[in-house]
Amino acid sequence: MTAQRSTTRNPWAWIPTLYFAQGIPYVVVMTLSVIMYKNMGINNTDIALYTSWLYLPWVIKPLWSPLIELFSTKRLWIAALQFAVGTSLACVALTIPGPSYFKMSLAVFWLMAFASASHDIAADGFYMLALPEHSQAAFVGVRSTFYRLANIGGQGGLVYLAGELQERTGSMQTAWSIVFWVLAALFVAMALYHWLALPRPPADVHSAGHTKFRELAHGFFQVFAEFFRRPGILVVLGFLLLYRFPEAQLLKLATPFLLDTTELGGLGLTTKAVGIAYGTVGLTALTLGGLLGGWVVSRVGLKRALWPLILLMHVPNAVFVFLAMAQPQDVAIVSTALAVEQFGYGLGFTAYLMYMILVSEGPHKTAHYAICTGFMALGMMLPGMWSGWLQQQLGYLPFFVWVLAATIPSFAMAALIEIPAGFGMKASP
Image 1 (spheres, rainbow, N blue to C red):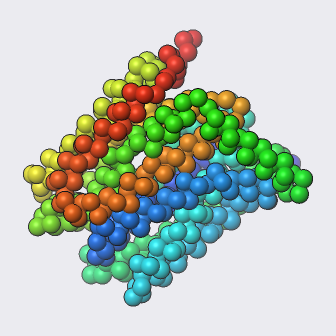
Image 2: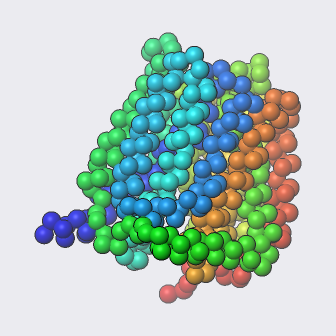
Image 3: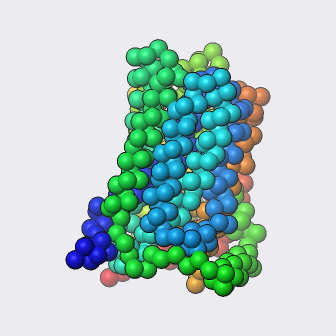
């Protein structure tokens, strides 16, 4: 009876928490690190360069995904990696008060990024093993919602908390150290919870062994070769790398711009205000844009929706030009402008995700989709690395004008890709 319960546990008992846990370390590594370093006086060049390198584990995660298949169960991987993330968060909290906090915390963020990318592999694989296909489709929206809630909680709630603690303690180091201790405790608790709450699907078994390893390695390289032999692969890769070329640069400088003083060309917002405007209002608009984008594609298909969605994604970047020129101090005005930009980004990103699904179609769609996500991360990593240096050379206003010009490669690649008519459109009943 106990074994039966363990294999058929209610999905609501673990899917929301599993995907909330998947979202938190990503937002910590990609966004909270930027805000923390800006609060603690690191310049934009170093912030953009070094935090962009943290994308690398997500770029190359398809290379070690077979190890998750070979050794132990995905259930054990999930609990162990969540404990590793919790330990990493505690280590960040310990490094912040020290004299070499920048180098030490970056090293820990690097380890956390590898643990988080590996957790993504294990969690997504476990999801497919623990649920029948019809239930997978039913819970895909739940997955996405709780992942987005993790982003809002991280960029909104935790940033606001850091600002509130800074005001109470008078120390930014103390404030961020407390935030990371809270996160560490949360992740250790999640690891223990998932060790108890995750079901034990019969298919979740490890397959280590020399023969199995050789077979898997051979198949792994075959899958990679098949992906790169597809017709028009250079156009596919160009689109994956350049579609978010402007956003990759904008993303790294958005929060520094909001936090920098007006004398430096920024808006001079408090950390708490950034948590509200960008982390809560902006991300909520992003989520709504993504939902609407998915509905539009399901109604008219990706081919017809592509250009409207691309325009709606890139044109709203002009709000940063407006903000840099006007430098409004009213948080409501800033929040509204950011909501417009993020809503458009959510719409346009839907087209990108659907194109990755199209490219991945075939017998190896899971592996090919993982390869696509690697190129997606690479497309964010490389432009982000130089964006801080470029902004410091140009200033905020010319930099945001450059971001608008940087949409040209994205439009050019969109004109070259081929999309079958009706792809993505919901079939008529």
